[in-house]
Length: 517
Image (cartoon, rainbow, N blue to C red):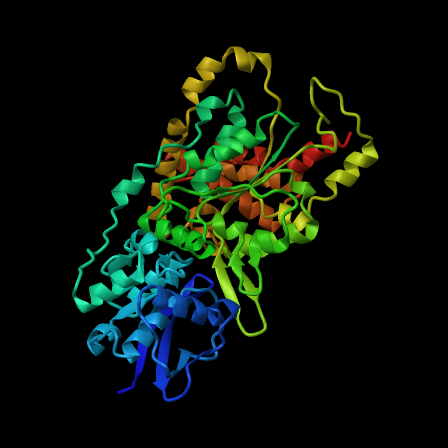
């Protein structure tokens, strides 16, 4: 007796899972294998992989017309992750593998088949597992290489298989495969291999600015000559940022899973540091493609995005950062759908003061003309620059810094800086009632509520407002930075010394005027 069957599977749209019903029908007629439901080329080719894999496993398909529908039919599907559920659906419909209806209703299958029947890993396993759990799915049958990744989702039974014959034997009860259990403690042991600020000699002001950036999630711009240490400073920022919560780890791992960049790691436990080259395309930076994939800003989610040689990036590419810097996400529109990727990152931009790099350097002489310097610095986008809170001039290291290196390293380690960051973060969490929120993200209402100035601080900020010709955005940023500095000191009210220090990091215009000559 021929029959129809339905196998539950899933695909990813952006970083979200979309459940797919794999409907299989066997009917009278010559052997045909048709797949419908907006499949891409890889899915259409799965019929050849399935036929060959089953034949090499000693299973012969019945001489019948096989029709597979991937429902809902109006959702575009891509990739080879439907190989396993389609093969299992055919076997079930042909009575080769009896499966109880209750088992099928609460089990999701995904996996790509090789020609010998082995099950290959897929991209996007973690978002599929999270989506399945949200929709009440009880268990997953997945490639063995993806099992540890999926098992991080709590209250979900995960079984990994290396070969389709193992899966068939498990369903029949001939051989039992143990449930996969992932332990976060095993992954946490990898944390601690970050670079340390003890290796950076001098640059105390830049280190202090980075501590403020990490504590309040303030974007930062470095300007200085080559060799002054801008890249070394940026590379170590993740070492002083607070440890990620489990939910943050899940979010970041989900983005890497969709991108196929988890590699040998099944879970991301420390903050990302992404440093794309200045020749990167718009799609590479913010995401895109016919089936949109996350870009570098999403891979830097909850981590650091470092843009070295900032003005060398194409202006059209850089301007795309304006939306995610404000909304903490990026939306990519296509004809049939709009996909949103998370993009809550801390931006570090770095640039030289002139084309040769040595304008204002106390040792090396600049060979650029004033016109060249002006044209070079005009590449800085005013609206984008206005979204960068901290603007720091990084001076070259002097011999005195080098000679006193041992003392500097003792005082400015990453651990020392991180202690202050964690104290400031704890104050922010208490202030914002446990929300994952930062001083840099405060609205005007929150600024008015939490940025309370002492009388001396009001006098200082009034003078700064006039002398620096601050816009309202600049004024609010000055208050946010002052709030973070006060949090680092562990005090409730913003005093004049906090405002004075904040002004130091909002004085890029005066520095640019100086190096313009």
